[in-house]
Length: 283
Image (cartoon, rainbow, N blue to C red; front, side, top):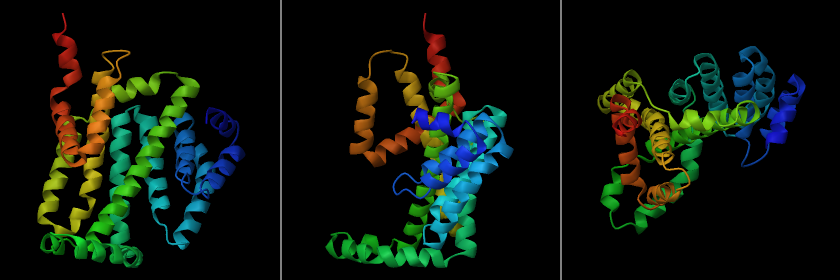
Protein backbone atom coordinates (compact mmCIF):
# COMPACT_ATOMS: atom_id res chain seq x y z
CA UNK A 1 0.00 0.00 0.00
CA UNK A 2 2.77 2.45 0.94
CA UNK A 3 4.70 1.60 -2.23
CA UNK A 4 1.61 2.36 -4.31
CA UNK A 5 1.09 5.62 -2.42
CA UNK A 6 4.71 6.60 -3.04
CA UNK A 7 4.26 5.94 -6.75
CA UNK A 8 1.02 7.96 -6.81
CA UNK A 9 2.68 10.97 -5.20
CA UNK A 10 5.52 11.06 -7.75
CA UNK A 11 3.44 12.88 -10.36
CA UNK A 12 0.07 14.05 -11.60
CA UNK A 13 -0.22 11.39 -14.29
CA UNK A 14 0.49 8.63 -11.76
CA UNK A 15 -2.28 9.92 -9.49
CA UNK A 16 -4.73 10.18 -12.39
CA UNK A 17 -4.03 6.64 -13.61
CA UNK A 18 -4.20 5.14 -10.11
CA UNK A 19 -7.53 6.83 -9.33
CA UNK A 20 -9.02 5.71 -12.64
CA UNK A 21 -7.81 2.09 -12.44
CA UNK A 22 -8.72 1.57 -8.78
CA UNK A 23 -12.18 2.97 -9.49
CA UNK A 24 -12.96 0.01 -11.75
CA UNK A 25 -11.76 -2.76 -9.42
CA UNK A 26 -14.67 -4.45 -7.59
CA UNK A 27 -14.68 -4.29 -3.78
CA UNK A 28 -11.82 -1.78 -3.62
CA UNK A 29 -13.19 0.82 -6.06
CA UNK A 30 -13.67 3.14 -3.08
CA UNK A 31 -9.89 3.44 -2.72
CA UNK A 32 -9.86 5.65 -5.83
CA UNK A 33 -11.54 8.22 -3.58
CA UNK A 34 -8.62 7.87 -1.16
CA UNK A 35 -6.20 8.74 -3.98
CA UNK A 36 -8.01 12.04 -4.53
CA UNK A 37 -8.11 12.72 -0.79
CA UNK A 38 -4.42 11.87 -0.36
CA UNK A 39 -3.33 14.34 -3.05
CA UNK A 40 -5.64 17.02 -1.65
CA UNK A 41 -4.22 16.49 1.84
CA UNK A 42 -0.56 16.45 0.86
CA UNK A 43 -0.65 19.11 -1.84
CA UNK A 44 -3.74 21.19 -2.59
CA UNK A 45 -7.17 21.17 -4.19
CA UNK A 46 -5.77 22.23 -7.58
CA UNK A 47 -3.38 19.24 -7.69
CA UNK A 48 -6.21 16.95 -6.61
CA UNK A 49 -8.07 17.80 -9.82
CA UNK A 50 -5.80 15.34 -11.66
CA UNK A 51 -6.75 12.20 -9.72
CA UNK A 52 -10.27 13.61 -9.47
CA UNK A 53 -10.53 13.42 -13.26
CA UNK A 54 -9.58 9.74 -13.17
CA UNK A 55 -11.89 8.92 -10.27
CA UNK A 56 -14.75 10.82 -11.94
CA UNK A 57 -14.28 8.78 -15.09
CA UNK A 58 -14.88 5.58 -13.11
CA UNK A 59 -17.69 7.10 -11.03
CA UNK A 60 -19.60 8.33 -14.09
CA UNK A 61 -19.38 4.93 -15.77
CA UNK A 62 -20.60 3.30 -12.56
CA UNK A 63 -23.41 5.88 -12.37
CA UNK A 64 -24.56 4.85 -15.83
CA UNK A 65 -24.38 1.24 -14.69
CA UNK A 66 -26.68 1.93 -11.73
CA UNK A 67 -24.18 2.46 -8.89
CA UNK A 68 -24.46 6.10 -7.80
CA UNK A 69 -22.70 5.70 -4.44
CA UNK A 70 -19.17 6.08 -5.84
CA UNK A 71 -19.82 9.63 -7.06
CA UNK A 72 -21.27 10.63 -3.69
CA UNK A 73 -18.32 9.18 -1.79
CA UNK A 74 -15.93 10.97 -4.16
CA UNK A 75 -17.57 14.35 -3.59
CA UNK A 76 -17.90 13.90 0.18
CA UNK A 77 -14.37 12.63 0.85
CA UNK A 78 -12.84 15.10 -1.60
CA UNK A 79 -14.43 18.09 0.12
CA UNK A 80 -13.68 16.61 3.53
CA UNK A 81 -10.00 16.25 2.56
CA UNK A 82 -9.79 19.87 1.37
CA UNK A 83 -11.35 21.05 4.64
CA UNK A 84 -8.99 18.86 6.67
CA UNK A 85 -5.97 20.14 4.73
CA UNK A 86 -6.92 23.77 5.31
CA UNK A 87 -8.12 23.56 8.93
CA UNK A 88 -5.79 20.79 10.17
CA UNK A 89 -8.82 19.55 12.10
CA UNK A 90 -9.74 15.90 11.68
CA UNK A 91 -13.07 16.62 13.38
CA UNK A 92 -13.94 19.23 10.74
CA UNK A 93 -12.92 16.89 7.93
CA UNK A 94 -15.09 14.10 9.34
CA UNK A 95 -18.02 16.47 9.90
CA UNK A 96 -17.93 17.96 6.38
CA UNK A 97 -17.60 14.52 4.81
CA UNK A 98 -20.82 13.38 6.48
CA UNK A 99 -22.68 16.62 5.69
CA UNK A 100 -21.74 16.53 1.99
CA UNK A 101 -22.86 12.89 1.82
CA UNK A 102 -26.19 13.97 3.37
CA UNK A 103 -26.61 16.76 0.81
CA UNK A 104 -25.78 14.33 -2.00
CA UNK A 105 -28.42 11.90 -0.74
CA UNK A 106 -31.03 14.66 -0.51
CA UNK A 107 -30.20 15.79 -4.06
CA UNK A 108 -30.58 12.25 -5.39
CA UNK A 109 -33.96 11.83 -3.71
CA UNK A 110 -35.11 15.17 -5.13
CA UNK A 111 -33.83 14.92 -8.71
CA UNK A 112 -33.15 11.23 -9.37
CA UNK A 113 -35.84 9.28 -7.48
CA UNK A 114 -35.85 6.60 -10.18
CA UNK A 115 -32.44 5.43 -8.93
CA UNK A 116 -34.06 4.28 -5.70
CA UNK A 117 -36.93 2.65 -7.59
CA UNK A 118 -34.32 0.41 -9.20
CA UNK A 119 -32.74 -0.42 -5.84
CA UNK A 120 -36.13 -1.11 -4.29
CA UNK A 121 -36.97 -3.51 -7.11
CA UNK A 122 -33.83 -5.47 -6.23
CA UNK A 123 -34.49 -5.62 -2.46
CA UNK A 124 -38.30 -5.85 -2.42
CA UNK A 125 -38.36 -9.68 -2.75
CA UNK A 126 -36.04 -9.90 0.26
CA UNK A 127 -38.32 -7.62 2.31
CA UNK A 128 -41.35 -9.71 1.33
CA UNK A 129 -39.58 -12.92 2.32
CA UNK A 130 -38.58 -11.51 5.72
CA UNK A 131 -42.18 -10.39 6.34
CA UNK A 132 -43.52 -13.84 5.53
CA UNK A 133 -41.05 -15.62 7.80
CA UNK A 134 -41.09 -13.13 10.68
CA UNK A 135 -43.26 -13.55 13.77
CA UNK A 136 -43.56 -9.75 13.98
CA UNK A 137 -45.07 -9.18 10.55
CA UNK A 138 -47.39 -6.45 11.84
CA UNK A 139 -44.41 -4.46 13.12
CA UNK A 140 -42.54 -4.89 9.85
CA UNK A 141 -45.59 -3.66 7.91
CA UNK A 142 -45.05 -0.25 9.52
CA UNK A 143 -41.58 0.02 7.96
CA UNK A 144 -41.39 1.62 4.52
CA UNK A 145 -39.00 -0.46 2.38
CA UNK A 146 -38.24 2.54 0.15
CA UNK A 147 -37.18 4.69 3.13
CA UNK A 148 -35.05 1.84 4.44
CA UNK A 149 -33.34 1.45 1.05
CA UNK A 150 -32.64 5.19 0.83
CA UNK A 151 -31.27 5.34 4.39
CA UNK A 152 -29.11 2.28 3.76
CA UNK A 153 -27.76 3.73 0.52
CA UNK A 154 -27.00 7.05 2.21
CA UNK A 155 -25.23 5.37 5.11
CA UNK A 156 -23.18 3.23 2.73
CA UNK A 157 -22.11 6.34 0.80
CA UNK A 158 -21.15 8.12 4.02
CA UNK A 159 -19.22 5.16 5.44
CA UNK A 160 -17.29 4.67 2.19
CA UNK A 161 -16.44 8.38 2.04
CA UNK A 162 -15.38 8.39 5.69
CA UNK A 163 -13.24 5.28 5.26
CA UNK A 164 -11.58 6.81 2.18
CA UNK A 165 -10.81 10.05 4.03
CA UNK A 166 -9.37 8.28 7.08
CA UNK A 167 -7.34 5.90 4.91
CA UNK A 168 -5.87 8.83 2.98
CA UNK A 169 -4.97 10.64 6.19
CA UNK A 170 -3.40 7.48 7.65
CA UNK A 171 -1.30 6.92 4.51
CA UNK A 172 -0.23 10.56 4.43
CA UNK A 173 0.93 10.27 8.02
CA UNK A 174 2.80 7.01 7.36
CA UNK A 175 4.63 8.60 4.43
CA UNK A 176 5.43 12.03 5.84
CA UNK A 177 4.64 12.09 9.57
CA UNK A 178 4.78 8.64 11.21
CA UNK A 179 2.47 8.45 14.20
CA UNK A 180 0.64 11.66 13.30
CA UNK A 181 -2.66 10.04 12.36
CA UNK A 182 -2.69 7.88 15.48
CA UNK A 183 -2.34 10.95 17.66
CA UNK A 184 -5.02 12.84 15.70
CA UNK A 185 -7.47 9.95 15.86
CA UNK A 186 -6.92 9.45 19.58
CA UNK A 187 -7.72 13.14 20.14
CA UNK A 188 -10.68 13.22 17.74
CA UNK A 189 -13.57 15.05 19.36
CA UNK A 190 -16.53 16.98 17.98
CA UNK A 191 -16.80 20.57 19.16
CA UNK A 192 -19.85 21.51 21.28
CA UNK A 193 -21.14 23.63 18.39
CA UNK A 194 -20.86 20.79 15.88
CA UNK A 195 -22.55 18.31 18.21
CA UNK A 196 -25.34 20.76 18.95
CA UNK A 197 -25.91 21.31 15.22
CA UNK A 198 -26.03 17.56 14.61
CA UNK A 199 -28.52 17.07 17.43
CA UNK A 200 -30.72 19.90 16.18
CA UNK A 201 -30.69 18.31 12.73
CA UNK A 202 -31.80 14.98 14.20
CA UNK A 203 -34.61 16.65 16.17
CA UNK A 204 -35.83 18.62 13.16
CA UNK A 205 -36.04 15.40 11.17
CA UNK A 206 -38.62 14.09 13.65
CA UNK A 207 -41.05 16.81 12.47
CA UNK A 208 -40.01 16.59 8.83
CA UNK A 209 -40.52 12.99 7.66
CA UNK A 210 -38.67 13.69 4.40
CA UNK A 211 -35.53 14.57 6.39
CA UNK A 212 -35.42 11.26 8.29
CA UNK A 213 -33.30 9.74 5.53
CA UNK A 214 -30.25 11.82 6.49
CA UNK A 215 -30.32 10.93 10.21
CA UNK A 216 -27.84 8.01 9.86
CA UNK A 217 -25.40 10.42 8.21
CA UNK A 218 -25.84 12.97 11.00
CA UNK A 219 -25.01 10.24 13.51
CA UNK A 220 -21.93 9.07 11.59
CA UNK A 221 -19.51 11.83 12.79
CA UNK A 222 -20.41 11.02 16.39
CA UNK A 223 -19.77 7.33 15.77
CA UNK A 224 -16.31 8.10 14.38
CA UNK A 225 -15.62 10.49 17.28
CA UNK A 226 -16.75 7.78 19.68
CA UNK A 227 -14.28 5.33 18.15
CA UNK A 228 -11.56 7.94 18.54
CA UNK A 229 -12.52 8.37 22.20
CA UNK A 230 -12.35 4.63 22.87
CA UNK A 231 -8.97 4.30 21.15
CA UNK A 232 -7.66 7.39 22.91
CA UNK A 233 -8.62 6.09 26.35
CA UNK A 234 -7.30 2.59 25.58
CA UNK A 235 -3.96 4.07 24.46
CA UNK A 236 -3.38 5.31 28.01
CA UNK A 237 -2.46 1.72 28.86
CA UNK A 238 0.22 0.90 26.25
CA UNK A 239 0.61 -2.74 25.33
CA UNK A 240 -2.79 -3.75 26.69
CA UNK A 241 -5.07 -4.44 23.73
CA UNK A 242 -7.66 -6.34 25.77
CA UNK A 243 -10.03 -3.37 26.27
CA UNK A 244 -10.09 -2.66 22.52
CA UNK A 245 -10.66 -6.32 21.67
CA UNK A 246 -13.54 -6.54 24.15
CA UNK A 247 -14.97 -3.29 22.81
CA UNK A 248 -15.09 -4.50 19.21
CA UNK A 249 -16.49 -7.89 20.25
CA UNK A 250 -19.30 -6.05 22.07
CA UNK A 251 -19.79 -3.80 19.03
CA UNK A 252 -20.38 -6.90 16.88
CA UNK A 253 -22.47 -8.92 19.34
CA UNK A 254 -24.59 -6.05 20.67
CA UNK A 255 -24.52 -3.67 17.71
CA UNK A 256 -27.68 -1.72 18.53
CA UNK A 257 -27.07 -0.87 22.21
CA UNK A 258 -23.30 -0.57 21.66
CA UNK A 259 -23.67 2.06 18.95
CA UNK A 260 -26.18 3.99 21.05
CA UNK A 261 -23.71 4.06 23.95
CA UNK A 262 -20.89 5.03 21.57
CA UNK A 263 -22.86 8.00 20.21
CA UNK A 264 -23.91 9.02 23.72
CA UNK A 265 -20.29 8.90 24.91
CA UNK A 266 -19.10 10.99 21.94
CA UNK A 267 -21.88 13.52 22.57
CA UNK A 268 -20.95 13.92 26.24
CA UNK A 269 -17.25 14.01 25.36
CA UNK A 270 -17.76 17.03 23.11
CA UNK A 271 -18.90 19.00 26.15
CA UNK A 272 -16.91 17.32 28.93
CA UNK A 273 -13.66 16.18 27.24
CA UNK A 274 -13.10 12.91 29.07
CA UNK A 275 -9.45 12.57 28.03
CA UNK A 276 -8.55 15.97 29.46
CA UNK A 277 -10.41 15.32 32.71
CA UNK A 278 -8.86 11.90 33.16
CA UNK A 279 -5.41 13.36 32.49
CA UNK A 280 -6.00 16.16 34.99
CA UNK A 281 -7.19 13.66 37.61
CA UNK A 282 -3.94 11.70 37.50
CA UNK A 283 -1.46 12.51 40.28
